[in-house]
Amino acid sequence: MKFDIEYVEKLAKVLAENELTEISLEDGEQAITLRKEVVVAPAAIAPAAVPQAAQAPAAPAPSASEPAKKGTPITSPMVGTFYSAPSPDAKPFVEVGQTIAQGDVVCIVEAMKLMNEIEAEISGKIVEICVKDGQPVEFGQVLMYVE
Image (cartoon, rainbow, N blue to C red; front, side):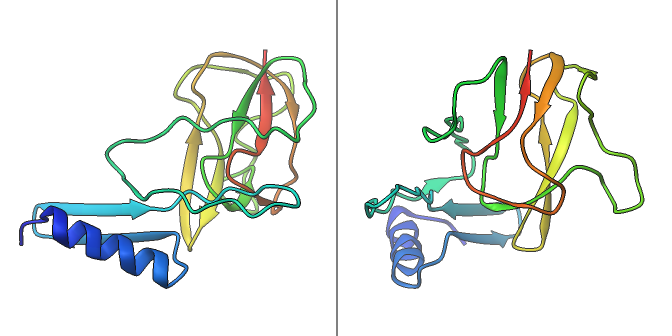
């Protein structure tokens, strides 16, 4: 099956009409994922974002409602549940004061029963972890700060 533009547009319409946030299809060697960015605006209804292909990841922006903190924020790239460790009985990926390198896994965000490892985009020292284990997180929410 070849994914032509009409087919992708039909998938985008299904995504929008059924209030879905993601559709993924695979056919042999071809795969396509459409995601709708969920924007939470206080006391206002935000327009739905245009679905985008998974091959073009967007850099998440820090939440505007978060106060300015010391260091660079690591934000959640999706809506889900924050986990600080790979399993309930394992030690956390990172702790305050720990030095990390770019590419190190710092936490997991579970979304739709998928465990998504969140990697550090910068190297530095963890100065604050802003969410608790098992807490729901929003797209763009600050998870931790790195100095």
